[in-house]
Image (cartoon, rainbow, N blue to C red; front, top):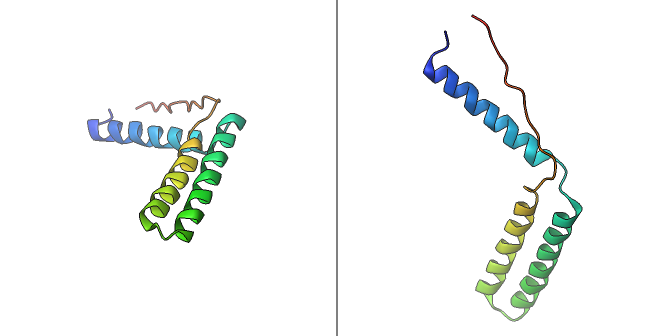
Length: 89
């Protein structure tokens, strides 16, 4: 018989493995293009803001571009399902 804590740990480790597999799955072309466009625009804005000595605009554009690119990596068309391991006691 599996205890509640052990059962919850197995569920959590399964969830983490699923999340990792989804993150490592290939990003669809549409989302990759959107992420690259966000990063390109934010890089341009960051460069212009640094040139114009607007530090806050530069920081905001840089951070939003990197976050936007990272978020688009989370999208996937494939559904990844990990089979739950069964143990018999």
